[in-house]
Image (cartoon, rainbow, N blue to C red; front, side, top):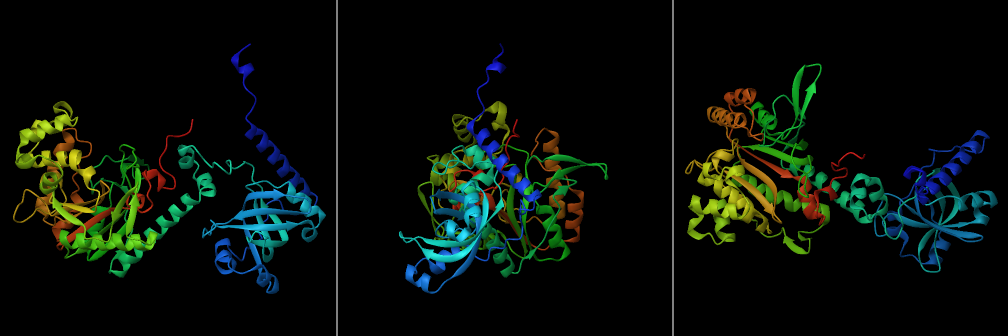
Length: 514
């Protein structure tokens, strides 16, 4: 006989699902005979668990009995304890609070009647139910609803994970976020904090005179960052299109048009690696202000992140993976050279290309792959910074003045044209923001685009395209401008003490299930 004939018996979960489908079938049959709607949608809960707990949990049993408080609640049944004439159930709604959005129901045969009470006994954990009644305290002091009306609103066909262990498989938590949210209060709180952060950012920007705008996600020419784009095809236009890697060039077109302060909370897409810090689609907040330079941007970004943290989690003293991060102190500021000096033993050799190449090789880079000997001194310094220093920048630190050759959209420093008026903000060893005084010299920008195009022709997939329309816009004249992009996902990792970017994205990119 084949192995197929000796296949193991179906998992218990399959039997449980079959039993629940039988219960649903019985409900449909009852409905056909006039015994009620199978999936009713006319129940309107007037109260939430968190509000009821806040307002009434401190009251004693006598007070609640004397002054009857009538309530109606609805949610997913998470716990159930059936006894003879009286039972308990716990429902969970979306209100969170001290009890995670949970409140207990006290259900009796006398209040519901024999038939409904008997039906309730066969309801399952995970079912969505609605209840009306009055508040009471149990003998153990738990605020509960003494139920007078009980309804099954949605029959759950799949059993929830074990109530004591929840979802152990991290990939299941990412792939089936709905399970993660219904079983893990910390996950729900994490995404509530994210929502508050994004709302706070939007409010902060508007308060400071910025206009929220929307720019295209489909670009005929990808631009605004050095990154590999996703490619698609527009049938009606009969042309290749690209998912945006950044909104930068469109936002700067708006500055040219006369909007002096603009921002966009945007989704961007980069066809690159996936890691604890990278997801192919991610959220940035990018903003531009006329008559600002990179110094203005650093001051503003510092204020923005403090305000966002305060709104989202209520503190500037954070913990990340067991270490403290203090956002209340002034953020440090260093050039790339100064950071290398501060965090390595290179000393005077910071300007020695041969020494940098030697050290980079010891860190695992190679001549064949990374073309070290063909690189300029500033490029080697940046590479050494990324390999040896970046991860050491735990406290908030602005790293400034990146080489002009790797910053094709940034304004060169007037005194030292080999570097730009640019910064990157690092916290916990990760880049959180990138900003600079914008290049508004159309001819200089055209030359830099041309250099990028040559690099692309030479095989650099991340080099920029030549954007003729953007050059045309600059030729009309763009005022002195500063612009910055803040990585929302990485900042949320910090605020919620999450080790992976997948923890703060509701539906992260995953390989399709087989």
